[in-house]
Image 1 (cartoon, rainbow, N blue to C red):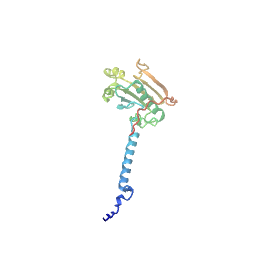
Image 2: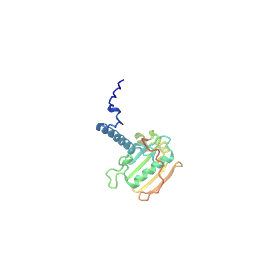
Image 3: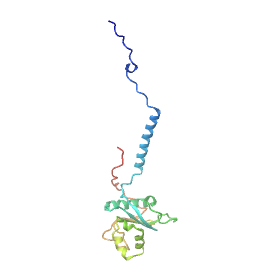
Image 4: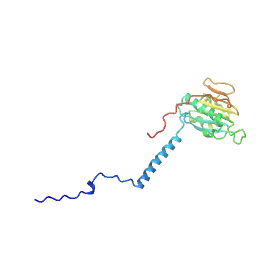
Length: 205
């Protein structure tokens, strides 16, 4: 009997396979994908809403008077944090543009926000420009309810400031629903306070 000649081993069975290096195009595509993801997440993080104060919008502005609107259900503590943020801006920069407010004393050599009064409401109806016009005109059908629905206020007159929760004091009269948070000069030192909770940060993980 003749022995069968053994067939030569194929290259595929001659040893462990070596991994083929990634193509340069694949590497580039992967780097673009990872870079885009990092860029998107970074943008989301940097543009995230400030959770140390309640969300608010500016409803109307007439010269130095500004009305702001916070969501219904906003607590007094959250109103307080917003009023104190206005105070912080008044002390540090006087630049209320970052708070979405147009200049109240434009062209004034003493500053574009030398005098400002901010009302805080949790009902959008009271921040309507027409309602503000009626209030400032002294319309008796508006004044009482307008002030009663006020949730907070901040007032800056040159170097004097005041802020509180509830209706703004008028002609020296303080409403029973008003709690004055601070009253003094913007040159006074700000008290050291614990930062409010920031909420859960945005994260892709």
